[in-house]
Image (cartoon, rainbow, N blue to C red; front, side, top):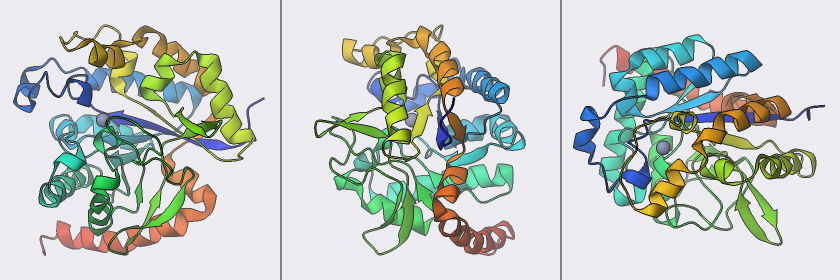
Length: 306
Ligand SMILES: [Zn+2]
């Protein structure tokens, strides 16, 4: 029997050539010339979620939304939550606050212009909100986001804030704004936090291990987890990119097993959007109240009043 706790199902919508592992191999200028597979792969995930009757949150890259607005429209029309994955998949700590502000506002506006509703949630490229880039939380709050799901409470070469809060909570940004944070899920073993929330970890671990770890978050900690996946992870036939062995391992490992594991996961656990899960945890007012006041701004913005 499924546990009654409802977990957050999330997808970071980007193409296989936009990932951080290949950032040194493919220049952003070349993205336009790559064969795009994001539409078909997102469609595959939408079909799968439909089959199980689950709604998910799709953190969509602005670059993708701009070129394929129909993906955003379909996600929204099917009743899923549209959220933001930035514009160009740059790591935040490699950007200046000015660059980050410009990108973030641009990406949010692209999505809101398509769905005609405020976008509440944000997830950073490669979870790149770290100790070095906490200032980004101020910019997210000031741009009208009410929740973030970017902080990975682990040690990693590219991301992570080791020792940070591992459950959904409301945080105060450096400038004093409030933002609800849903950290990427981890499971503690002997004091060591192991990432178990999806993506490459879901492909590396045997499914039985992921299930056990995620299940214990639900049953022992009595907390929802957040699971994340990318459309390219259900596409074992994607064009192969020549990169160093470690990047290739991270990207290609067990791609052919991912879809069948995902089906098992959808069978074994209950899921909904981040918005719904945070609302059930009592954060509804916090994520929607601010959004209401921001939606006034949004209307003003639509009227062309700056
Ligand atoms: Zn990403």
